[in-house]
Image 1 (cartoon, rainbow, N blue to C red):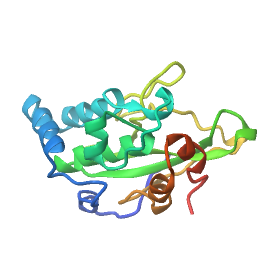
Image 2 (cartoon, rainbow, N blue to C red; image 1 turned 90 degrees about the horizontal axis):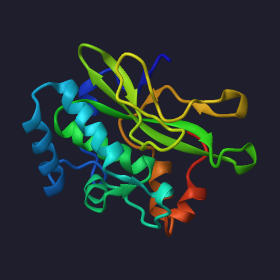
Image 3 (cartoon, helix red, strand yellow; image 1 turned 45 degrees about the vertical axis):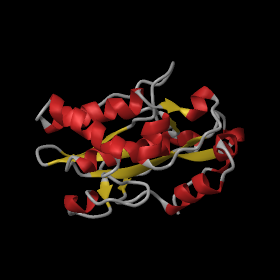
Image 4 (cartoon, helix red, strand yellow; image 1 turned 180 degrees about the vertical axis):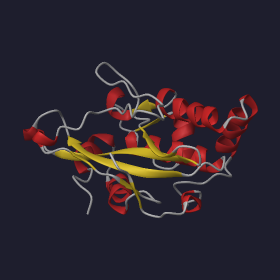
Length: 202
């Protein structure tokens, strides 16, 4: 897929977005220090951050948790969140290390069938000077889902089935979609959020 950045300037994907993406909080700074102390290679740092968001943060829908986390510090503290929250954490860690990171979305079946309706799914795009933009999905693996950090060939969580009405949006946004954040703020718990997520972009 030909990705479509909202801005052609990668530096526009380094900004904080209070209160969702904030670098200078205790846990975020601690985690960034751990990553930067482990390697000086930017690709390796990005992969480490991706694996933290993918593997160390439980997916709230998978565990049946009612807790909604939104901002990166809260996600890291509570160690749980849905796809949007995990993408907020990954963007925060990477932007905090000077690695441009954007927000991407897909329209997927909410519960595996057309009758269940649709919901947006959140993931990220990362930029390196030597590679350009590429997407990763920190959703979290489980049987049937095997997302990996791969620059050369995408390995995301969900294969998009256009014949079932799913959509793989090519856009790389500088900020999380307002409709996504609104759905998270306005839901009483994750059970409500499961059905309240936006169905599409725009």
